Image (tube, rainbow, N blue to C red; front, side, top):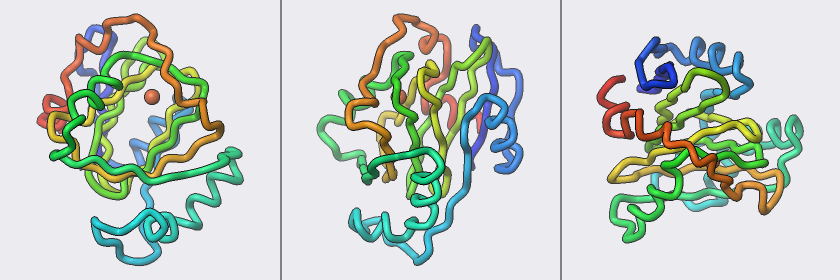
Length: 184
Ligand SMILES: [Fe+2]
């Protein structure tokens, strides 16, 4: 189930929110968009990029107009990917980027750790969830040891997603994907 876990900077759990509407409200306080989307037609897990984008065309267009996104694509990762460890490690340290990062989980899941102030907002996203990371907000992401997801990504600039690592080791104080999933 989708969940928001709020921690202090030492990794102590302060609060847990499970109702999607309440998750959206709590995240909007830190400028993060959280929405639940339904496809306009049923989708199989093996649906191609165009079919996936078509099924969410209205929602994508709404965000493109609202935020000025220039492009979108679909990425998928499965547990048999030989580069899964390398890919996982890339996002495990706290970083920022100038792009407004937006991800919609068509299926599967992943854990976002957002660090906009003196708290860390950990969001376990699952199929049907959309989340944004505002520009320049410190964050990290864990897809787990056996990543399994398909996501729609929206971009404002082709190079905006390049990660600037903050050099902080705060991520090490927090449970990884497996630990978070077991908490919610
Ligand atoms: Fe990121």
